[in-house]
Amino acid sequence: MGMSNKNAKLLILSTVKKRFQNQDALRIELEFSHFVNAIQVVKALLKYDKKWAFSISLDDGYADAYNNVFNMFYGKYPDLNNVIHNGYFFTDGCGNDVMYKSGFAGPLVDSTGNDFHHENQNAYVKWSEYEFACDFGFDMMYQQYGQPAIENLITYNDFYQDTINGRNYVYNKLEFKPIFGTCNEGNTGWINNEGKCPLYDAGCKIVGFNNKSATVAGVFKTLEAGLNIEAITNDDISNGIIMRRALIDETTDTNSLQTQINSIANDTVKRWLHYFTHRVTYTTPVTSASMSVAKFKSLMDYLHSNFGKGGLDNMWMASPQEVYEYLHAYHNSNIEIYYEGNRVIIVVKYNKPIDFRRAAISLRVNLPSAPTKIEVFNIASVTTNISTNYQNGLINIEWTPEIVSVANKFVTKAETSRLLKDKDFAQFMVNRITDLSLKSPLQYRINNIQPIQEKIFAFDFGVAGYWEQGLPWNSVTSATTGVKLTSFKEFNSGETVNYGLEITQAFYAATTVGNTPSTPNSGVYPDKVLKDSVYNSISNGISQSAIKITGLNNDLLYDFEFLANKSNIDTTTKYKIGTQEVSLFARDNFTNTVRIDNVSPINGEIEILVIAQVQQGHLNGMRIIEHG
Image 1 (spheres, rainbow, N blue to C red):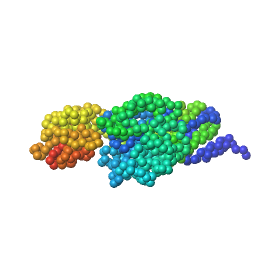
Image 2 (image 1 turned 90 degrees about the horizontal axis):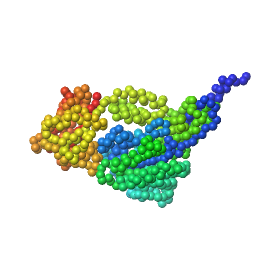
Image 3 (image 1 turned 180 degrees about the horizontal axis):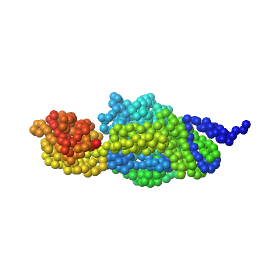
């Protein structure tokens, strides 16, 4: 008996499904209204099929590079100088904004095992800050582990073991191992007499250095003129790329920088440019190998208006590790095309190395017409993100579990805190998810968060003139009794709020005897807040002072944070609100604060007592956080 047409069709479908039950492959099925027997699928040389790639590394792990650069790239929240930037973005070619990203490299621990990045270390990026930036797509890069000076690493074995230790140390902190390693002109052990590179041999698949030139086990490439992506082979990728970086700092000529960028962006081949600097700072004079915020921002403005979202939108800005991972996927992924009548099936196979964070591939598909149906299979088991633009035939595929897991982490945090800032971060993370089945449950949770309308008011107490921090800080420049402020500026928005501050018990005086850290603005409050204060003095007969905050909302709660700093003498200050009190040792204090939380106003007022416990009582800075 012959097989019916219906059964024949079922047999074909089951054969097709069986053929594509490869759980190691991503399958994209396009259905058309007509028969299709030929399309072309081309892997793009750069992610999002951009014209050129740009990387900038921030070396030595300094805190101001993180605080100023991350907030500049993301926008919306103030940097170390209380400047709120607009953020910098390009698009992925499928209607989604992508934030500029960078890479941080820095020493990890010294020879005695002290961590440069612990939570009480303010000169360097903290681990919590590294984690936060990496969640947004930044990278932590290997620079050195446990040596007082990596320049002393002379032998191959020393450098190799330091790299092994350093990569493992980062993994224990951030749950990934850096595959970008960096060294400089002082690194005498970065290559041995046999041309072996210990960083590469220890797992750093891409190594950057300055002022060296050699060909090693990996492949030496020069990046001052932009690496020619079209000349990179799979042998290069497999062996590891040893590349030279170019330093940009405050002495770099802006015009020559723009000329070089224009040359790379307009070249007939696709190129990758990689710069590095150290601090990005408001402090003057700018230290060697670092940039002022103004000069760094002018470079970002130039990129944005010419090659980012505000211009041609043909630049891909990412960390060196992200670029390398893409190049690896480009050379090691396999594309297969199958035709089934009016259906086209694209199968993408790629075995992502275990150390990779987010390998990706972008495809260009020449479609005969717009598909009537699009289905993606194995996305959960193979990749967590795929974005498409079937008008121009662009498909972006990312192999990373981070996008969804990080979004879930940020949504959970926002649900707990109910702070607007946390909800904003959570929404940014969820917006990166393109699979609606994964995105929708997280979006539903965000939509159900009822945020606390938090406001922050920051106060600088002390001497009028030079040592006033300035807006959005609220300055109190008198130690005598009386009304000092009749309105406050909100720290993040600049909004004027009709609250008042009155000194009801006088301080002894205002003074500029606070000490400041050797690294400018590395305390929890800016140097101009640390330097001056109002204070009382036991020896001068004034041991207690009082401040009254007026006009508050009786239905809201208020947190109070206090900072005291006095050079050279041992002094302790007590702060008291109602029955709650906290004490702070103030000698040469740059980083410690104390808090009294969840205070409810009485008749719109809260009174703060400042009491000298040992010698003097100081008040340099105060923050009031208003929430529901």
